[in-house]
Image (cartoon, rainbow, N blue to C red; front, side, top):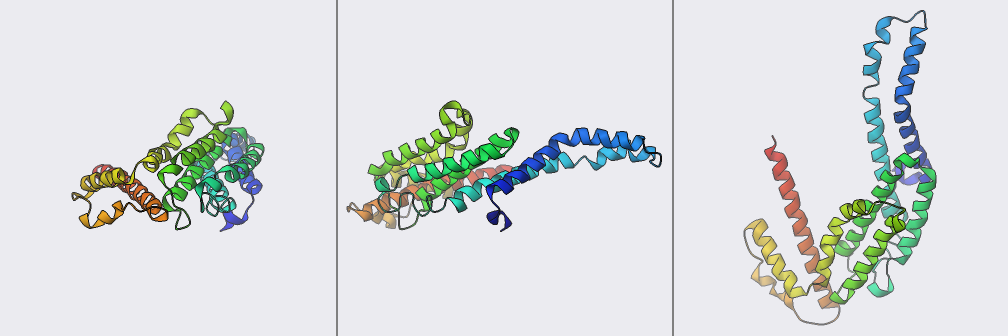
Length: 266
């Protein structure tokens, strides 16, 4: 809870402090050894091998601290500070009238604050974490946006254009994150977007294959009601639901493969 109540500047100062400690550790260690050697009351064993062991865990602890604070800053910005334009605003009601522009404007302001505050050597890490959090938030809106959101195939181009605008914000005409880094961390969203321009029948057929591969049994025939050809919100919600189910099943497949590989390593 403390993270939520701290401002960006405070969290960035903590990140800068840990980075400074890490970068100055070698210099600090040499200075301490020099002072101990010049101290008449010091013993040789106090500053020979023992001192380096005492500082052995410090650099790694600083790196871990920077990483945790960086992720905290990123997800605080996206899911807490910008929740009013992300979760409460993006694609609520009619997607064409509630697009990503408001989120991009406020996100850009936060990126400027971060860029001006943090040390240049940790800046890329934090901005990368913010991009990852933004992709997670965008995916959450698409796949678990609740009853206030419903997507049809006609909305697919809007969604793709908005996601491209989100990536362009972090690319910043070549002055931001490298393109390969953006592609790496936006891969999950890029894999889901084609589902929104696929017709419902094809989605259901894909779902049949995915469930057969995952569980060894096809889709329950009783779910044929999903193919209802009605118009309006029902068909839109059917399409959104089908996209969600296939995407989540693919995520489950990937997770099961990772856990299987992990267990086999023991």
